[in-house]
Image 1 (tube, rainbow, N blue to C red):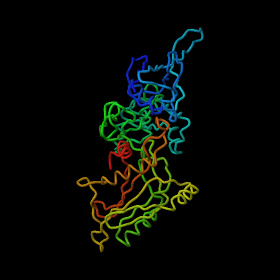
Image 2 (image 1 turned 90 degrees about the vertical axis):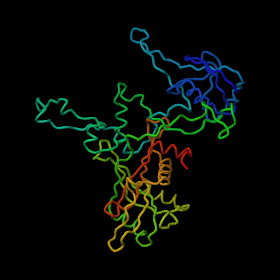
Image 3 (image 1 turned 180 degrees about the vertical axis):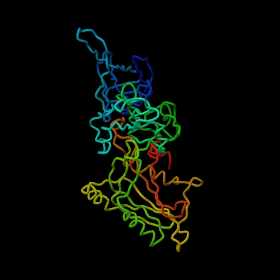
Image 4 (image 1 turned 135 degrees about the horizontal axis):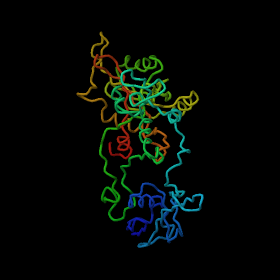
Length: 401
């Protein structure tokens, strides 16, 4: 059915289905009017009369809406009075709605995120004997502390990606100090309920198709380093490959901690590797259903550990007598295969990163991928990876299969 929607920015006609939830109506209106937030109310009459609340369970048909009905959108403004009673400023009131952004205080973040959020992360510099012309207690542009996202410092220290909390600090460096900074997860899904054409994949239009995505390099990373508590953890994991020559997969259990080598950095500290049921050959590994998964999770929780990543081998013996392996993963060939990237994206979606700055309460992931392979010296070597948030979205919405 066709609904007319009137707002302070004009009137638009929206083609919607009576069977969609009112939450979806709010999303369609927000997209149609290009609103940056959900701080608006939809009513059937003027002056905020007969409001339609945003709900996942209530449908448009529950409110008796018919083809051609007019809806009214209001951005309610609360006037702020000064001491002399005059109206000087105003601020928007956010209506309570299931589609509204979750309160930042209610999002339970990881302990390491809570710690880093209380640190400014500025890089202290000593007085330059050549350039600084002031006393010991003064400072100038040559010795002032640098921000954790300073490009010159990161390049000088050979840090390719800034840490996630440095990225948040960069967002908060504006005039509003990040008060309105909000991270949005990418969606590649077709919007449901469009009645102007047959359902996807038989039809699509500009109203229901997802926004265009330009693939680009991610400037930050959620985890800056992976560390094992002791070498014996990896040696026990490699024992299976040394005996059989078959590849192996395991899950990394540990914790997240601050990483001092990167401003506001995070590292994954691995305490144990759990090897789930799997079928192994020299070329591939297939994971099987794990009946002990719940027990393993319970034991890890009691030990104060969590699943922080996964590890797999890609080792081919080159010379058994010398103990060397082939160097196959390099810039001239590949670092991760397409299937491994999809698997990493799948795991990162499963273990999303709780974030109070996100519209969904989560953003990105700290789940790491570790590949055990041969290096340029033909010795066993480990490399850590994460796929970008764009790759996570493409995997989640079945664009990459």
